Image (cartoon, rainbow, N blue to C red):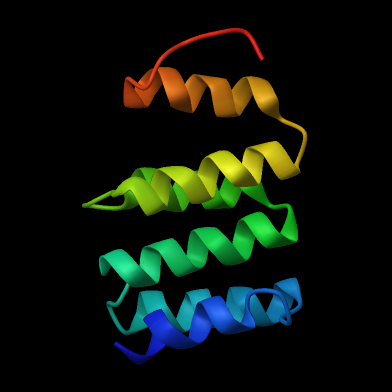
Length: 99
């Protein structure tokens, strides 16, 4: 999957509008359900600080792995939304605690 390899490389370089254009292309071409593409989109949006869209994409993923969870938790951490990261910890069953 080309997008799965390209998107993470450009996550730091793209501006939000270009990332959203990639997202639209992915949706139109029915690539959204692909595990690696979903993780790449989460990575892009968390790098932009747009964690709400990253979380929406995360929730829409048919399959989530440890990478998916980590990307979203790190995104919340970067955005200083530690309580949201803690909620994900609890949801995943890793453990709950005060952050």
